[in-house]
Amino acid sequence: MTEKMSTHQAEEDVRNEGIRIYVDGRVVPKADAMVSVYDSGFMLGDGVWEGLRLYNGAWAFLDEHMDRLFEAAKAIDLDIGMDRPSVIAALRDTQAANDMHTDAHARLMVTRGVKMRPFQHPSLSKSGPTMVIIMEHSRPRLPRPIQLATVPHLRGLPMTQDPKLNSHSKLNCILACIAAEKAGADEALMLDVNGFVNTTNACNFFVVRKGEVWTSTGDYCMNGITRQKVINLCRENDIPVHERNYSLVDTYGADEAFLTGTFGAQTPVGSIDGRRIGSGELGPMTERIRALYKDLIERECA
Image (cartoon, rainbow, N blue to C red):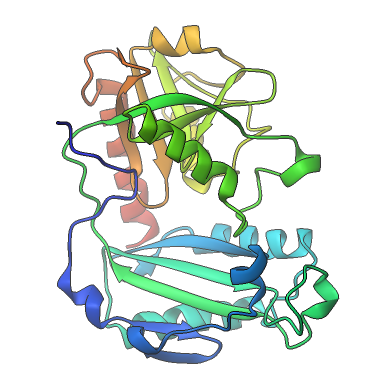
């Protein structure tokens, strides 16, 4: 039986049992890190978050992550209650408390805070926001390329829940992931409202066809930071890259496919809907982009 995997699969690390977690200005032991059952994030998924990665003592693309966090908070009319330098200081305080230097992943979450009563209206959140930073020792472990299955769940229109928001409300993507698992795959390939290939439930999606790199238009997917870095690297290194509409037919006939995300950087895709993609293994273009990205990280986090 094929081992079940995900794009966020990491090596087991016993040090994570002793991590300390940031909760509203205090860095506390894992067992003591708690929020109220009245918290807006727990009760309604009302909040935004960022995933960040630590390499060689530096947080990769920190400015871009802070831009996205504050932009998302503004979009949902959430006052984070801290300025940008203070959020960065909280991140670094948590890093120092855990004595982390590299191969660490942080999930920085901000919700609308504790509600007075268990109902949805934002005015019921009067006590100010809740901020939590979970930081773990985390080295990706993928023994084989990811297997995807196309699912009926769509990445929708901005007037429903804008897919560009890194919100706590992830149920649409969770349902997509469940559907993919029921189909025997690791994760889900999701289409957009027009039926074009868009993204997976957790990562941005790329294919390689005849030496060209294709990804979606970006209209219906998370505005991924790693996604944009890959597009930029292709342009800077004379690799033809296109943000365009393309179908499952184009996808099944691709020479390679890979996913991008903060955690796994570039993750190869071996099959989609039971169809092998290319050789089914890490392809030469994906390998080249991985090398270019690794060089970028080394420069960024020197």
